[in-house]
Image 1: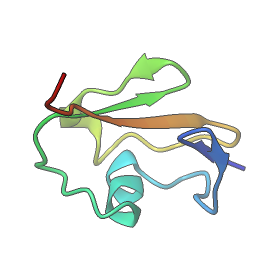
Image 2: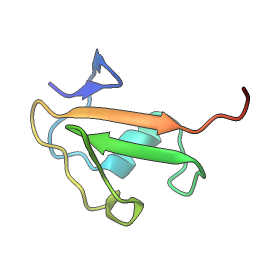
Image 3: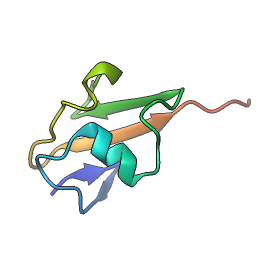
Length: 67
């Protein structure tokens, strides 16, 4: 089971970070988006090749304007 943004998900081990973003309708070229897996930031250049392991904790963060 992969945890996505603090929730159990149907994401499976072996899926890439880019595939997870696609499930969330987040374009891979979206500005202000960061992804962390198990507390470590995954560089954008690795999103297509970084494969998730079973029990991974994935956080997708978006920068928001405002105050």
